[in-house]
Length: 439
Image 1 (tube, rainbow, N blue to C red):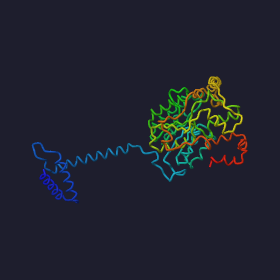
Image 2 (cartoon, helix red, strand yellow; image 1 turned 90 degrees about the horizontal axis):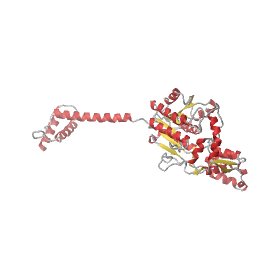
Image 3 (tube, rainbow, N blue to C red; image 1 turned 30 degrees about the vertical axis):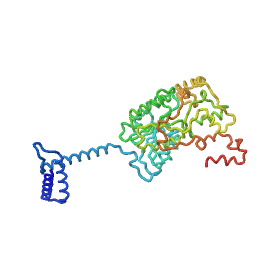
């Protein structure tokens, strides 16, 4: 075998040199390598080894070259099948006057959470498409949040399929923030929380431009929930995951902020009535979270590919009962005579029946006090607390703000006379102590 290898190597070398062309040393090395491959194939039938010939070498080289071309083709195919990130067209240094690569269609932008989401998207340099069904006066505050031409508004309806497709096809990110807390004759929970997300997910699936769908649900959404509000939310989540598996679902806890319908309701009751009414004993547990923290998390999701197809439960770090939150509001507003009152569930339900009947019959809007709906009353039997195994702020590398101090500072607007109405204001250094936590 050693002599055969030597003869084969020398014959290849001589033939390569006779063939002319540059790089004789490289040709000799290639010939020796090919000879080793041929010898490694084993003895030929009938004894002895294969002796190197130009035809055998050429066929072997062709096989190797074809195998390499196939591997390169597979690699390129995998590369083209991998979707590009949303922000691959990013331009500028970042900020309001740059382009983040995100063109987001935000449905529900005029709601409580929507205005904060639009603000954070726009100031990061994203283009924002805002389909709304309200008048210009109710959406004009959204226009200055982005740079010139970056905020686009137009009229639509959740039942107008053409308008929905018009918005979706011009965006690479779609964010659904639409929801409601009570039913009317025009829109039920099933219409808004189940059917609407299904139709939006279908539009995103059919679109060639949409890469990310972010659907905002609620902490406590469960198919077995007693409250119809949370049951319909869970049904909508299932529809979105079935139609658009890459969708990211966000489940925030009770959100607090300047425009919330949570602590503000307690403060309004405390300022108008001698007590704050709670359903039952007010022992249902919650983890309230700042609406600004939720908006920041949502604005960061489109550019984070690790969040594709996952669910995030965004809740505060501390757990409160409804009774504790009502007392916290009374203390923050410094209501001297207000107390917490407990109303039996059946009394609340009796009070809600005429109102809900009118909501489903009359053709004009009715004032709807928070807590005077059957779904809200039924929801007081459950706890709304994040489970340890669920993804949340930690996985997004965020720390939510505490629900005290500056976070609920907006409740000071319900005070009747500033700091001087507090008995502690008689202390000489009271003002310095009051400002200390804000430093």
